[in-house]
Length: 186
Image (cartoon, rainbow, N blue to C red; front, side):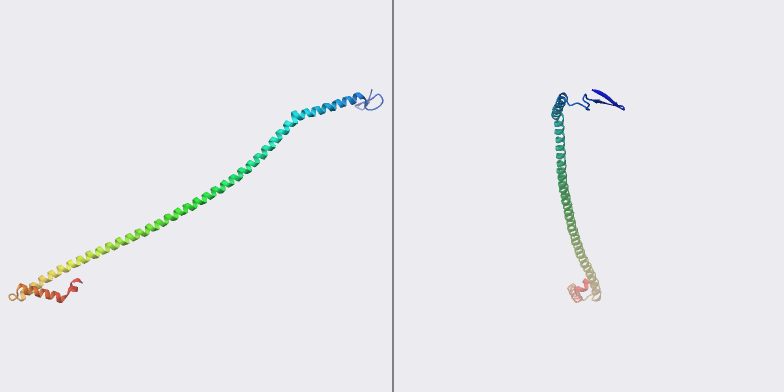
């Protein structure tokens, strides 16, 4: 084997002038190297590649599972949101119904209070009218008594000796009947 130098590169020439020599030793070494590379590939495949593949497969499954869980959680959250919104609407309706009932009860109570007040006012007015009638009757009776007393005095002076007590009472009654009850009531 000879070495030829071309510039700074050294090239090894085989004995027969070829660049490298194909002999059985080179073929045997190449076959051994190929077998070693194949064995190394199989060993690395079991030792390194399969665990990496398994890890990637697990990661992919986990990501898929997480995505499915996230979608399920999103659907569940949406369902809960709709449920809470429905409950909120129901609560608002219930509150409105309660307020409506309270307004109705307040209106009823107002009408009852007004009716009671009107009844009380009517009773007071009736009692006042009754009392006024009684006072009027009392005043009329007092006036009658005073008129009777005055008439008796006048009659007794006018008839000084000729009239008896019975005749006097009869004259008073007759005078009162002629004047009538309406005169005393007005």
